[in-house]
Length: 472
Image 1 (cartoon, rainbow, N blue to C red):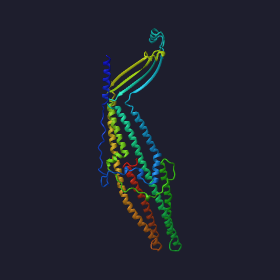
Image 2: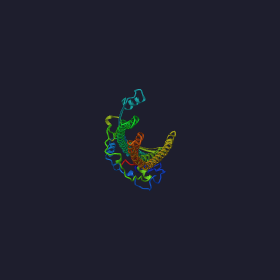
Image 3: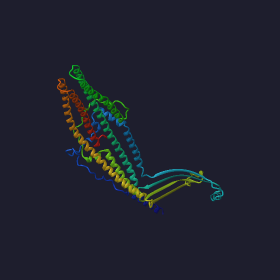
Image 4: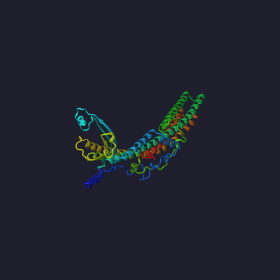
């Protein structure tokens, strides 16, 4: 008899283990992606990419490195993202225990006194000779759900994938932060150069104003020429406080990114001193998908949605629950811990098959499949956006180089024009309007050159970010 009882227990355990090995739902497979074989503007399919370079080696300016290093320690958005990672770590730790049984320990003591005229009261007086009933219980209960269809393993997998997703999200924040600081720093250098150019042109305007006044005093000029020269000088002077204002605001913006109070940003280089490697290799588009953090986070979200489909499907199938308990129970407090008289035990197993839940489980399953389709679309969209951003950055870096070459030649031409116009003006062979026009054109050309050089640096930074660089 005892032998048959043990055989039944062993058979039940084997059956539970066998059913636990079952799993519903499809294994994740990356959906087909439409990707070019290579990025535009790249003459060959090179597997190397600038995104593999650490940011400390990509940005060689020491002042910029200090700014980025400070931001990685103090930027509030990044700190929030890191806390999300820590939260996800705690959820992963908890998920590792999902397959273990739940254990509860409970102590209860109860005294009830029914009415003397009630059936319970009459029964107590008749059988126990007292009008009240005591009951004391100390029990430990164990409950365990067999993971027949992989439902619990799916929850564990989701917790781990969410942890990886938050990690990629933090990396995406870092790549954007590194790019934003570099863009702001280069914008600051551009404003410094434009301020220097404006101050130098202000000196030329002041010199021309002095010349026109001397010519007027000598009877070789008129008041209109003096007024035009003075207006030109005032227009140039007006640019200086505007640029100084922009510089202060840009410095404060950088300080905000680094988590610091508003203040001055140290820099020891000029815009023209910044240089990057000439080999701006983009690498293969398929490698970008596995490197760029936001794209990887979108794919991890798809994996989570795929696992949710399996869990929703498993909820419609039978669930096997096993419970067991034991402890001490007594009608008298004095006998509560009397062993073995107060010992009790119980064991139970149940298989529950949902039959009618007003279509709730079916709806959850269908919604989970639709949400998976949404995740597929979002993943493909993230890949498409990344591809477009890289292609745009490659076009910008190429065309801005051409614009810089043309603008450099234009600046040289206009500088010579200013020099010649001033000589001709002193010889009374050119009017004051020609000099003013030449100076104004030269000033605008130099300001444009600084803006183009800054855009060229910005395009390189954007290429680095769009390829997934900056989180290493």
